[in-house]
Amino acid sequence: MPSNMLPLPSSTSKRNRTYFPSLPTNHNLSSSQQVLQTLRSRTRLTNLAVFLLLLCLSSSLILNLNYLLLSSSSTFRPSSSTYRTTSSKGWDDLITPSQLRSGIPLSIETTIERDPRYSELNHLIMVPGHAIWLGHDADKVNENDDWILEPMQKGGSVRTYVKHIQRGVEELKRDNNALLIFSGGATRLPPSPPLPEAISYHNLAHALDLLPSTPISPSDGESKAPLSLNLRAATEEYALDSYENLLFSIARFKEVTDRYPERITVVGYGMKERRFTNLHRSALAFPLQNFTYIGINDDLPDLSKHYAGELKFGFKPFLNSPTGCHPPLSTKKLLRNPYIKYHPYHTSNPELLELFEWCPPLQSHRERDSLDEYEGVYGMSFGGWVPWNAGRMEGDEVTWGRERD
Image 1: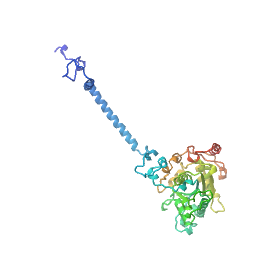
Image 2: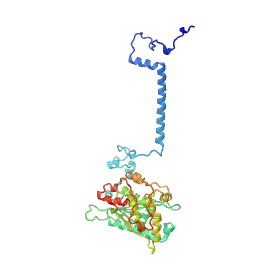
Image 3: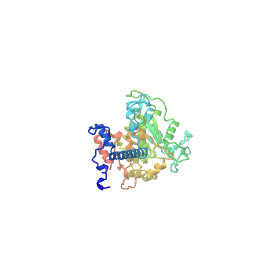
Image 4: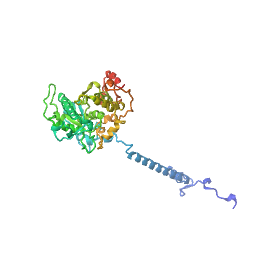
């Protein structure tokens, strides 16, 4: 066949192909018919299919990545809004606006009802635990056999622990606006029972009849009778070291009273006064003028070894690591949590989340030979917002600046 007789390719044909052969050749197609004819053309139909396939593949990829990210526990953390609801459906119908705003899960908030008098308490008295009283015989509280002790605590220390408890109750009696908190977790390895130090101290205070339930008469200026002593004594059962004794007791005070303390009194070992005052209190940015430490040491003629040990194993490590988040202090926390306890304060004190997770880098300081030489040395302070100094006066800046040195 001659070459000039070959048919032209369809793509080069000048004939105007239509998919509506029944219509006259001079008929003008409607807009919908024009779109349909365009889509039915071979080239465009192929492009559309490829486009739809790519769209499906992209959507599938995005959905799978989203699922993997949300299901990963290492990258997903529920925010406080996760726990909030816009209505009380499913919970107590009497839920209050303050409970809705608290950031605390409603499943917990709806189980809490406080005596209104708790809101008047503003003074935290904290007694840190050092050992566990087994509670066998209240007449033998000054003997080692009724306690779980470390070897170094068997030289008369239990008598000091009893004195700490007694002095804490004495301070409680002096102030009707105070809450006494015994602090200390279940820190002893098996075969010790999983009994927190705080609960053992609280049990001992009751065994010695130090916390009666007798009603207290209102004093001058008080509109109603204060809470009895037994209702103003609580436990903080998760602290693993002295820094957590103070921090967690503040959080526990908030759980009980629904407010933060304005004053703090700590009753503990005299050799630990600088650790609590210069380091822990400073780390939490709590005002120095509202902080009191009452020190009671073992009744021994020579306490030089106690103070040397405090300097080496307590004060210096916390001076270098204010929150105890670096070794050797972090290792101690690990060893002191044999029963795998999780404290609840991230949930009950959401406003302190940054403080709970604060882990400053290791600090370096000039070495000194005795605790007395650290009299004017203060540890690093948390630089974020905390409720107890939110309304700090302008004139307080001199004190805080000096303590940040």
